[in-house]
Length: 206
Image (cartoon, rainbow, N blue to C red; front, side):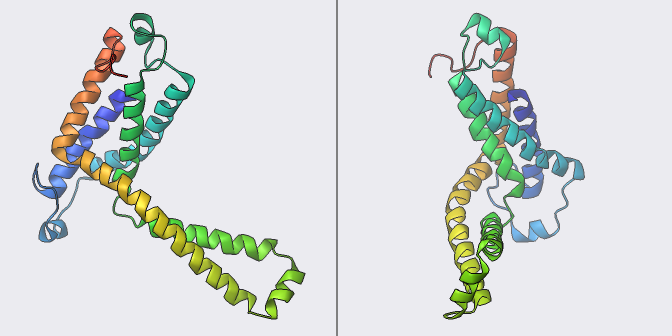
């Protein structure tokens, strides 16, 4: 997973450099964005990061919880247990990879709409008819469902916006070409050390 993450970071470098029109630009100028046409291959590779990100998070969390060594050589020559640094790195880079291709989507609004719709749907089917008739004395049940839908949607969207915004900021920072190059080099170097030598860059830190 460390090696695969390095290849995804490599695609970030090409994707973002071409999208921004420069290696170091932090933002895309509006007029550049209008005429921009990213290659389908780079776009496809970037979107595979969603799957790789999920697998990275799973690998990192599993390694920490089950105390799994990152490679057979690491277990033989260093420690028959998890390399905490590698696990934490996989979780962080996995989150970044998951959010990178969907940074431009209004995720908080989408989650809010899903939560509001699900709540209204469940209430409509679970609330007994006698309770509906009782509620109808004070307010139209359909109007009440609409109000609940709006309230739940707003609460979930606002809450999600805060947390998702922080995660998307991490993703954007890590995919900035100069940082993506560093991430790529680290992934390849760490992968070689884990697989080939049985050690880690930061084996004595954690």
